[in-house]
Length: 232
Image 1 (cartoon, rainbow, N blue to C red):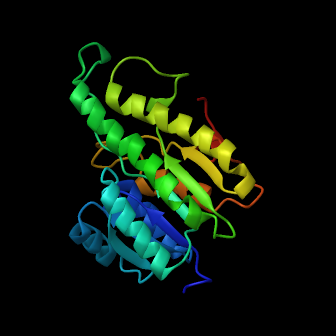
Image 2 (cartoon, rainbow, N blue to C red):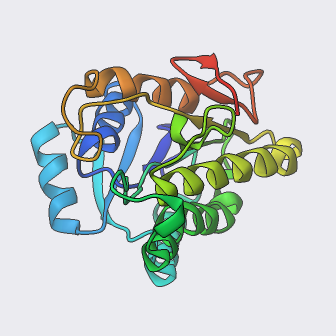
Image 3 (cartoon, rainbow, N blue to C red):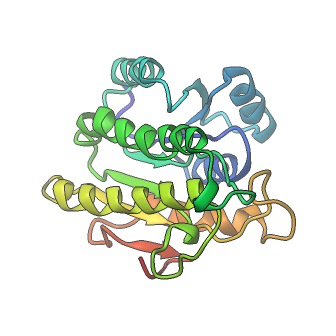
């Protein structure tokens, strides 16, 4: 069993922010489970990045069986997990308004953006407890800030607000296990989801990597952008 190299799981990592987070962590010496719904796309992303610390794996966060299968593999091969980064998300629904939103789409969005990360945390916390420095990073968004919330993007905004609430609950419940749990807004980043005009992907990913590598006396239960607290 691998005992020395820290192990991170990054969901939705075959493109965009997740892919860049995987690259930065691997550069810093982490072994990274680069997860994608399609294992072929995960393999392509890992091959493109060209770092042998990247391990492409199949993971559909909306599929409990997929989560269970990956947990079994991690348990058998590594016996622990050091960092869980819940990055996978769908449906930045800029075309919708709450008053007439397609609620079936909202339900689907909750499955991936909230229930997926929630089940991943429930499933992997026992392996995180085996780590000397366990971290959970929930990739959120300023769109989920109640302080700044207005109309529009109802599915995405409500799921990110819920992910923020989950972050607070888990941070409180897991404090005794020394598991630091934080929500990170990467800002508006130029990705397939964010669209053109945003800042470089590397800039958005850096705050997530910072939260993954916090010292043991670092913050928990916070909401951050660029290492600075932002309003819930």
